[in-house]
Length: 292
Image 1: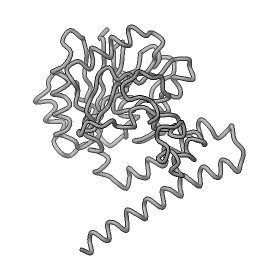
Image 2 (image 1 turned 135 degrees about the vertical axis):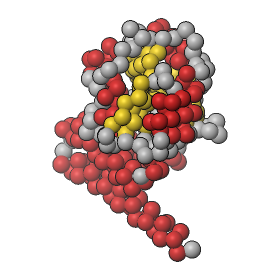
Image 3 (image 1 turned 90 degrees about the vertical axis):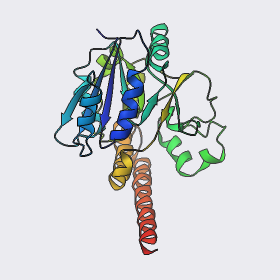
């Protein structure tokens, strides 16, 4: 059995994928790992590049864009590692990342999922790397802007900005761009939920892991750099739709049964109302740009 199975889902991000794989194979001597690149029908030469330049990676080619969850599951079903890592192709790995994270997991056997510090290219924290679950209260505080007005209070319960960035903390969720899961935890809760296409699956997986008694931990003992949004920028309308659809799926799956009609109506109205406002704003900006 390998120490680590790394799964990278790619969609038309050839240059970012090259950077990611270069840093992956340059890291952590002494750790036995395998790398799966799952390509979602890219048209930019990603597959040819990965096969030619990184022969140690197993490249799986899908005939269509299966989305993030389904594509990851294709490789997760074949993976043999004690730990499994979801890794975005736009993430740059540091030389010590895998070694430190596996050592942390080995020393903390009740941790089912962990994520490290994820930085943007300017060195600031990518806030999505440690989150609270978007229950109705958290969603209300975020949608009304109260969490932004009081970022150091517990009103900021989604992005957890009240927690120190440099301290190990138990959280609700880490991000799918770098999500390390223990095999025993995955065997217990199952694979990613394929109802999600490109957002929300990480929150859902962490929810199920915590509900099964495992801990989810943000461990800033090492860092990676996230060159964010490489794939979603290529399909902005789809990305916006799928983000809000994921919010609705997550709410229906984990919260709807616990609330009455009016709360459920309010939450769904908030989700899809936000989607319409964002879509309209994007449309107006495009028209303004074209008219110049």
